[in-house]
Length: 493
Image 1: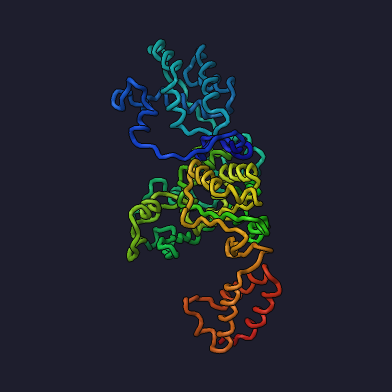
Image 2 (image 1 turned 90 degrees about the horizontal axis):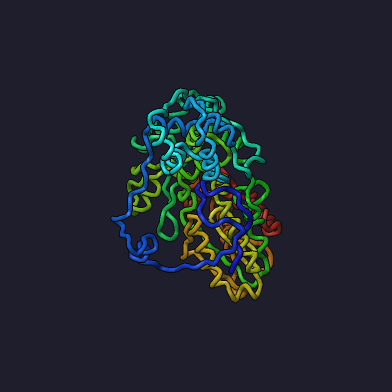
């Protein structure tokens, strides 16, 4: 039995799957056939064809208006009953029990969407009985149009995020007109039907080939959209706390703080999450904004501004498989947008809670830098590391992530232990071969000129080399000083 992690931060409605952090859970991975899965769902006397279909959302004006009344104010029994009575023109006796069932249904969860409330009313037996009993008397007499308000979950009430309750307030805060807001949000995906480039496109694309044969798509937002995303980052996302184990894209933390807890350990386990940013879909992002209390209409547009669906034309000339094309074609967090790292860290909070609890139960340390997971421990942890990594993969799958098995490395003391390009056997240091290659590059720049060494075609080669030297200086001051001396001797034209 292993402890899954710390307390619940976000409810299940925000799209973060898995068990509640802090509960004890027996993790097991097993292959199940299709018939076996059907047997788990259906009883012995049922078949997949004999079971009734789930209820479809109702288009009835009565149900729609009653759902809006449930959402239009404070989530208390008295307030809900009063709003529903105003909608129906009569304070029916069954409105109080309906309000209590509604609050119980969505207790502790993300702010529900209108379609979720409509589905609740369609499934609620008490409402169905009352609707049938009073079918000749129930009618809508008032459309509740009270202004929306922020309704964050309990954990989000302490976050100092910018309060935005209406679409007009959102447009004013972002500095755009209502029509421009709809164009940038593009809820219908109309811009995805245009070409890859042009004035109607919000992003610029660049396809990079990775070492394993896969590709990475860089999606860089254009000027105005990037300005809006930075506004969202500063006013909303930077106010959301991140887990203590997270070190990527967090102020005051770096790859050095990511690697430091694993120095001098008997074994270091390195794992990688596959397709980290594209795995966060637009619906999941919108659910997170509703967790912070934003109304559905505001949350959907914030999420759309922070996500992107890449057109198929970006892959022209690149042999990319169908699954990769479809993954990027659906709206996701774009790698290259300023909001993506903060959103990914926030929405991976449950994953970090569970993995830190799992590591703590096994006597190990855990840190994460973007999609890189690192665990380390003593001799006892080294003996069970093979079983431990299976548990990590199971937790990741339950949280809608996938571990890249080919990049998993179990590094014991007898080999070089590397994390994010740094060696952690005795202390955090730059790998010797990386240092030697950079030193040789700088030396050749001095002897032969920098133009002859810019084989990768960097447009700002001088700044590129200065950044690499600065990185070594931040990790190892002695080695960095040697490289700085060689760099200063380069003659630039």
